[in-house]
Length: 487
Ligand code: SAH
Ligand code: SF4
Ligand code: F3S
Image 1 (cartoon, rainbow, N blue to C red):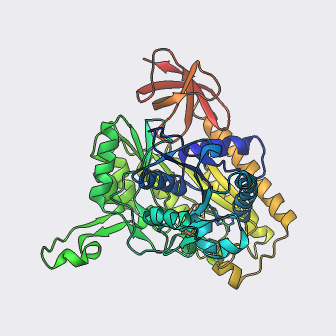
Image 2: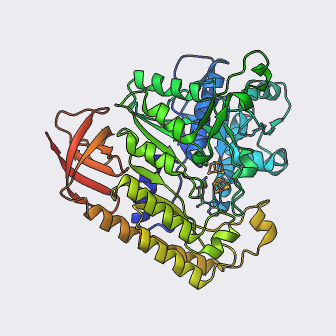
Image 3: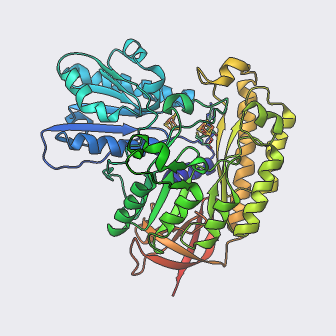
């Protein structure tokens, strides 16, 4: 999940919004003077933002420029999210607005990409008349042909889910980048089948990308001046790649027995350069191994931070969620993490309030788990039933909306307290910070993060983005540390 987004969300949580608002992201202009222009607006998680960079790369090769001005676009793409009802509603509202635009410009092609496209498939064309093109997450190589089809006056749909596609050979155009931090997609899909979750249906089966292409991408980014990469997947701990499985066809000629798990991949990327920081997201509590924790401990440049979504503190709820671990298992994993990586290792979570059958006691269990663990921050949501998921088929969405809201606000209040208290403990400490750019609040300040993923703001002086600096923390809010440079 996006670090940058996490900061935005964290700030919003502090400002008391009941639920994090996910901003739409617009792919910036490439401005190479090509004839046709595509406007891409992305919703949802970092996976989608990364996919939009792949889409931009595929279309650039076909003579398209990206633009930030929807009015000047020939093709408009919305890269959509289905994770909660609200995410889909946002896209439908946006399509209404774009409908107004299309009335003045009938030749405009409107396409829907991503998870909502996959979920609804050709039904999208019936439900939203304005849509010309529907492409699921594994169908982006087909976009040039789909656009051609629309040019010929037809509607175009490709929602085929692949067992192999990882876009390994496509180098994403990093138009949204600060030039310091970047995301590298290491796997696609998810096989976990958490009962509340739509992702296995919208992104298909899990598959891991060739580690050589991942390491090559990390090297290339380092050479271009990047100093931090985040390895991305829905469940990075189940990353597994083998020459045999991935290259069955070629095996006859040259048998190679190479197997790579996540811990090994992490180590390979860490060895690219000690000046390149490595982060990863998302880890799964049932799968994170001691081997991964030990690799993290061995390499200073693998950041001391784990996003380990717990979802609920009640073992009964976790069972209904099909998360594959209990409250006790989760607490044991956190203890192990702190044993191996020390008490300062950053830890964050995702939490769902009001899942099917959640009792008041279950909710209290979530709060008490939060007290036991003391997360640095969390993404917190009300349960939103999704069509086609196992929970929709098996359980009743029986927690009243008002109760969900109240429980969520209690979870948020608890998290805010922990975030602030954890940050207060950092006052007086000195951290190594990678400078990411100018602070959002003031041009006189720079901002970056420490290894534990905490945002730190400090006076600019003569420092520049991409540098490592040492900062002594002097004050804080729940979301940000503020400090002075140490020479
Ligand atoms: N693969 C990641 C999660 C991806 S979805 C993981 O397993 O941790 C991001 C978060 O959205 C989830 O962790 C969960 O907290 C939340 N989420 C997913 N489905 C949801 C639903 N139906 N209602 C509310 N929140 C949901
Ligand atoms: Fe969804 Fe669970 Fe897969 Fe995460 S691990 S994407 S929550 S099914
Ligand atoms: Fe991401 Fe939303 Fe799809 S969270 S994987 S874009 S459903």
